[in-house]
Length: 503
Image (cartoon, rainbow, N blue to C red; front, top):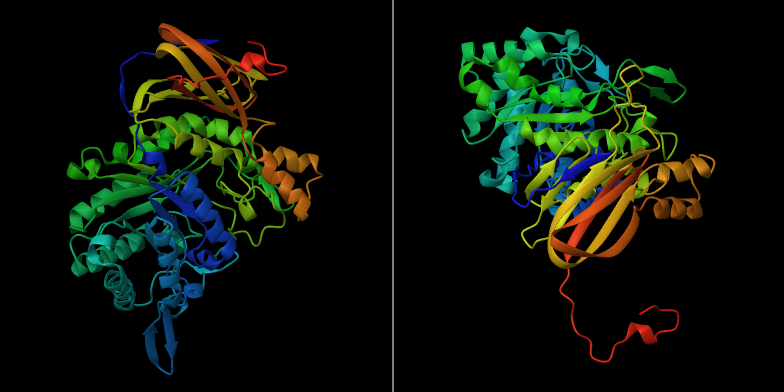
C-alpha cells in the first residue's frame, strides 16, 4: 500500500501542457454534425486550446481548383471549418498537408481517403498556395489571431507512406521553402517541424543542422509519440503490446535531447502533436479503462518535459482505415460516434478539475489545491506488473493511504470512479452483445453506463489533517474532491424528526 503524507504548502504549479492541443481526423470531417456535436461536448467539459488534423490542403477541402487553364483558390470549406472551431473556443494548430492533386509530382496516396504524399511538382506553385491560404486566414480572422496559430510543415516525413521515399533532403527543401514563404507574409507567424514519428530521433539532429546551415526560420520543434509494438491483425482491427508509460515521456523529451549543443534550437518550444498508446485507429485498447490508467501518469508528468502533447484524437469521427464498422471499434477518440464517453475521456475531464497548486505527486497520485481551499486528488492504479511478467499485469485492486491537509472542522468528500465497471460504456457494450449499430435503447444504456460512479461522504478534520484510505479497483482512475464545509443554520430543521433518520 502507498502511504503518503501530503504537505500543506505547494511544491509547484500544475502544467496545462496536457490540454494545449488535441488531435482530429482530417479537417473535412469537421463539416459533419456528429463531429461538431462531439467537439462541443469536449470543449464544454475539458476545454482544449488548439486542434490539429491532416488534410488541410487535400483535394476534399477544395482549396486549389483548376478549370479551363485557370487556377482558383476556394475557401468555402476552410472557412466553415475554422469558423466552427473558433465558435467552440478552440484554435487551429495548422498542419500543412497533404499535396493537392494538381500540384503533386506523383500519385502515391495514404489512407482510405487518399491523401497525396508526394512532393510538389513545382515549389513556386506550392509556396503560392501556402501564401494564398495564410493571407486568406489573416484577411478573415486578423493577424493577431492567426499569429497565435502554430503552423507545422507536413506530417511524419520520416515514413515512406507519408512522404514519398521518406526523402529527408526533399523534406528539408519543402520545409525551407514553406517556412520562408510564411515568414515573408509576416515575421510574427510561427512555423515549425519536422513532425516525425516515434523512432526517428536522428531526424531532429539532422533537421537542426539543416536549419542552422541554411538559416531556415523555425519557431518550434514538433514530433509524435506512441507506445505500441508491432500490429497483430484480426478482421477489422489489431492488437499490440505496449511499452511502459515512461516510454512516452522519454519520447516527449527526445527533441531537446537530440538538439542539445545546437544553440537556441534546444530552447525552442516542443510540441508533441500526436500521442497515444497505440498508433492504430482500430486497436480496442483505446476504448478501455486500461488505456486511461496507462495514460494517467503521462498526463500528470508530461508538462515537465514538453510544452504541449496532443491526444490523438478527440472523437471517433475518423476514417484513415475506412469507415468504422461498429460504434466501438478501437478508434483513437476520447468519444465514440454520437458522444459516448470513453474511460480516457474521463481522465481528461478529471484533469480539468485539478487545481493549479501541486501539493504532491507520485507513481499513483497527483494532489492539487485550488485557490478557494479545495483539495483534489487524482489517483490511478499503476500497471507495472512484475519484473518477470508481461507489462500491464495489474492486480484486482490497488490501495493508497493519504494523510491530507484539511484544516479543522467538517469536510465534504466527493469521489468519481472509472474502472472496468464504472464509467465504462465499453464493458456495457460487451455485456449487450457487442452490437455494431446499437438501437436507440442500447445507445441510451451506453450513455448511462459511460458516466463515472459517484460517492460522497462527510468527514471531520482534526489537527489540520484528514486521512483517506482509498481502494482502487482494477484499472481504476479516480478523482477525489475535498471541500471545506461551513455549516449554515436552518432554524427549526431537525433531521432526527424525519422517519428513518438517525439523529
